[in-house]
Image (cartoon, rainbow, N blue to C red; front, side, top):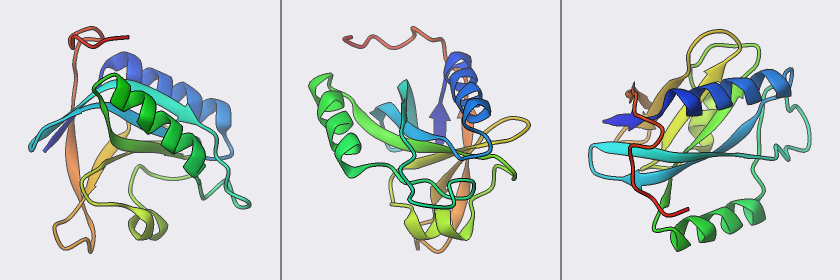
Amino acid sequence: MALRLSAGHRARIAAWAREAAPEETCGVLVGRAWDDERRVIEVVRLDNVAPASRDTRFLISPRQLADLERAAVRRALVVVGYFHSHPAGQAVPSPTDLEEAWPGFSYLIQPSQGSPRAWRLTADEAGFDEEAILGQEEDSIDCPR
């Protein structure tokens, strides 16, 4: 399993994480999915609407997510995963991340320092397997705008 993500996408997520600190930033990875690979076409930052503890939690508005999913489908794309930051921690899923994860999606975590890491639920949904993050050219995918 691999997640293809451009350097520009990684830079945007890191910048959003710095901007949101000490709270978590969050958003969606939009692109194309195959059995063994997810290709990110667009990263979309969404509001962290967690009612409290935004320094250790994030919540995406169901309405914002539904609107984004509809827009992606109109472009022949899908949500391939989600991203969020750990402003005071490592790029390792927390117990809350595990509780709230859905199968079939990539979960990219941006730490306060360093590079992001990507994760996927295990087949039994009891934990995560790390997913390789591979580079790609910003414009390597032909996609309608």
